Image (cartoon, rainbow, N blue to C red; front, side):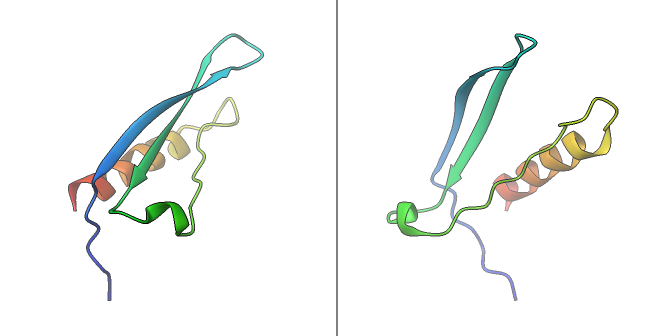
Amino acid sequence: MFQTLDVTDCDCRYLGTSLEGRDMKAIKITAGVGAKNKPAVFIDGGIHAREWISPVFVNNMISKVLSV
């Protein structure tokens, strides 16, 4: 059902600063040669002030993807 992901590159990128002066960062995870030509998924979490579960979900998902 699921194909295992051979993670070959994990890169943390700095996107800039928010209006409040906070750093905005992104993580790019690629698998194998030719990954540039494949579709991408963008997952965002923690946009609103009182959200607590969406940043936890994003961190957990990244952890699961990298530990497969």
